[in-house]
Image 1 (cartoon, rainbow, N blue to C red):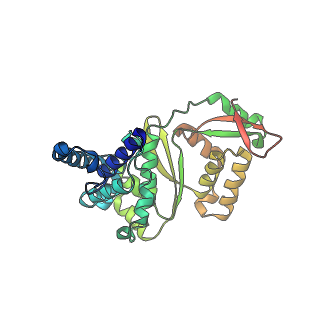
Image 2: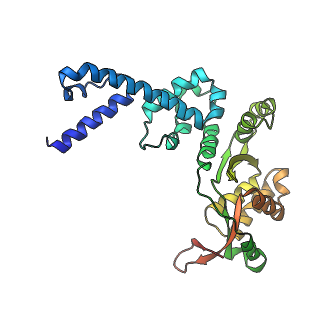
Image 3: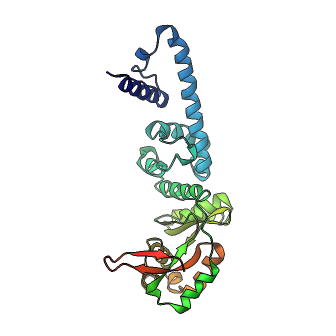
Length: 285
């Protein structure tokens, strides 16, 4: 075995030992016997630090889940997640995106199926806080009155994330983070199995989440996929005509005014139609 392969083997053994609950026996043959006790103590210290770091990092990204699960239960869950899904990047703020899937696969949490979608909302809020800025271009909205809706689209703001959930997860998260709605009200909606369409975005410097109608969700989903405004409006109106009463009252003008004010939409852009394909690319106004 050449030196490079041996080094790679040693590094792999070290990483396995750092992430595992026990010392990896494959590591110790690479250590000089005289230094093994010291190395073992150092390894144990790194393992303990890693687990503590995992708890802090996940708790920072998922504060609502900490409240829902309870701190005493969340800590061992975070350690288990660390071992099953170790970080692959040095920035711990980027670790934790697989937590929703992990929660949904945990047998002990099978009676709380909504936790996965709560985790998705919290991770979206976490990522929205550092999402690239989207500069507003107020003058671009002149396109709305001067162009065919099939030739233009709308650009969404920073950190926009959409989720159609079978549970009132936007309300649950807001009840814990901002107190609106009240916790009792959100709990009642959960018991009644109220579904919600959730929107996450960043308004100024503050990540936010809100529940929206099915029509608004259809509109934003199409816009996020790069569809024309005409297609997006067709999707929204179709949902409004078949959806609940509150969706049936969908007004694009009222929605757009609020979306621009809140930073959900930043500008209008003309679509560049490619003759060779049906998809659209956007170009600045």
